[in-house]
Image (tube, rainbow, N blue to C red; front, top):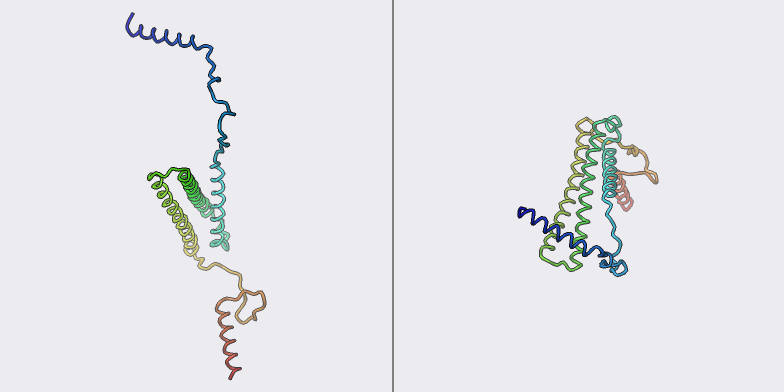
Length: 204
């Protein structure tokens, strides 16, 4: 019999012996019972899918209102397949940015709780400072993203020859202003100027 086979037999014999000696061993007797454990509270799983859905709805609302602002008075342009697909893609990118910003804030709050629980190591404070910087970068990116989207749809409107957004007329300058009418700054300034001139004439 080879040495390898002898060693295998020896190990098998030891294993069989251990099994036979502990066949009546009850592991449950050595485990802590639930009533002996401290109250650890319930464990809740974070619903990331819900946050993704909320971010998607919010970004879609932002893009729809933006497109309606610049293209709402041109239905044939607003309903063009390219504009519809472009709006969906922009909303998707904006939604991901919103979600990442929210996850960064969530991570930041968890880090602050760790500090409150006594983790005051230099490394922990370094991580907190890095996260603060990331939050600033996220805010800057979201602000820049909105600006770029506004520029795109505004420039698209101008490039296609729709230079001014049509607005409801508020009445001509010759019409007398009645209570509740909207008055622009130029007309208001003229009324103030005329009132002051009339007041000076009466004093003379």
